[in-house]
Amino acid sequence: MIADMNAIIKKSDLHVHTTFSDGSLAPLEVIKWASKKKIYAIAITDHDTIEGVKYAIENTNLFDITIIPGIEISCIFEDEEVHLLGYYIDIQNIELLETLKLFKESRESRGEKIVEKLNRLEFNLTLQEVFHIAGKGVIGRPHIAKAMINRNYVDTVQEAFDKYLNKHKPAYVDRFRVSLKEGINLIHNAGGAAVIAHPGLIKNEKAVNEAISMGIDGIEAIHSKHSSQDVMNYSKIAKDNNLIITGGSDFHGDFINNVPALGDFFIDYSHVELLFSKANFYKERREF
Figure 1 (cartoon, rainbow, N blue to C red):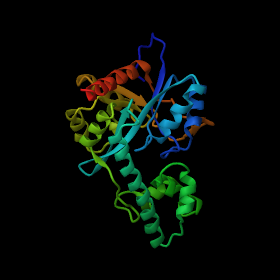
Figure 2 (figure 1 turned 45 degrees about the horizontal axis):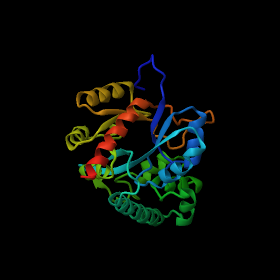
Figure 3 (figure 1 turned 30 degrees about the vertical axis):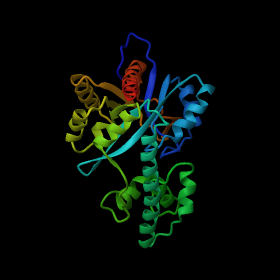
Figure 4 (figure 1 turned 180 degrees about the horizontal axis):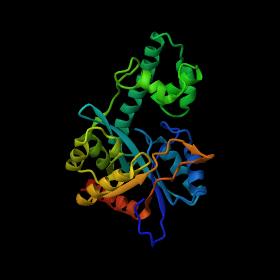
């Protein structure tokens, strides 16, 4: 959390997933819980899709909460996947929609190939049961892992990834991603502010510096898997480079004592206003 402790904090969770990617709660459920937990604003940032954002915006008038249109874009940097968060994107931008179509097609074909690989390893999974778990979302590895749990092939999602689904494991299949530069440009061209996601989880330390040199607008310093040292380090890097500090829970559906962890990691709304201003800069630039 970054805020003036003497001011009234408007909690803003800028990293939230729904059933339209790999979250376990539908957008309306997320909004209901956010309202119940007195969260001022949330950003729906599903992986490589804006379908959950569209649904959330259609229902935001039912609750006293601000919905920030967002996305989490899968990028590649020197053989490592790096994620970018885009805020206040134009969800009708043609370039964005065309690229997201490529992501969707790649994810769909990837899911089929992973199931085929697992079955060649003498598992017995069907695409139908994976589709059932995915619901409205595109098939992802977490959905396949849950199908493996249902079949008692593994005990946990982590075990499924560690033994079969991670890179260099027997059922891994690569998928479409954009370069870090392409991801930043995609967000900017869609009138959004680009932020590097959970930098403390990135193995290649050069990625953050490269993203800064490529023109990112912010750094997600506050994150559910960041240590207090990570928060301090990345907040300093953001300040030193005149970047916006952001934060969020990266909520996928985890519950603690029957309450979702949504909003447990957050930033004050004043930082959201900075993102809004930066996004407007890119929207205005598109008009000239």
